[in-house]
Length: 346
Image (tube, rainbow, N blue to C red; front, side, top):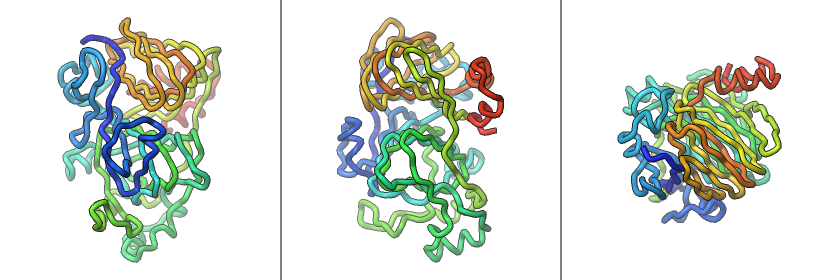
């Protein structure tokens, strides 16, 4: 495999709740009046991102994964498919109340993966918030009645959103993104979503959007409530490095750079690098690529060492080894086992 930073052209998605911020503020080219999502790094059958530079320009991520396998994915990745989907979401209006199935249910019912995900708020209007589970546990019977009677919102937990904060959503957590938010989302490679309630809104075709109430009731955990996630930050001369959540499907880190830092895939996992603010450079395999706000690059697992440089905020997503990527480095810096475990869902 030719090693270099592979810039990605996203697949954009129209939505009745979408807006114009992805094009105005993150420079996405879109044909839609209301763009809800930009699938930045995706090999999913319902939308693929495409390499835009270098040797593999014009190849989509599924093609690259099929051709290069472990060279691209890394030794940690189980299976032969690109395991995650990274997207941006522009919520001009609130999204539907929805829930995602776990792997077993999704594979049986949808021929797809389950969907555990994590949101990071990268744009936030005053008063914006998130619906994350329930104020108090309710029964499935009450859940079904409230869906029928349009009173579900009364029992949902509304959490004010905070710019820069992350929120971890396991499969089964009932949720909705509120109006006035831009979200960076890392998730399993899946498009399995069950709409519970859509606020009486019409779709882009002028008709009510399909709901999936029966399946939603099956997979919802009506005892769960979500909250902002913990993180751990370490400051060096050139970078503030913030460890975000890790789970069996993905891990995330925020890097605020004022100079040059060295990263390393170690052949174990691809790295997705997304620039949310500023401008900089990615040097990999002897090739340098300039990156700016809104751009996403993929570093193949076989690249090994590469560098990020500039004045920018970037998010890195990868498949992690808990001990090597979280426990060992953070324990060496003096952080408690309890603080580290909180990042790993323990």
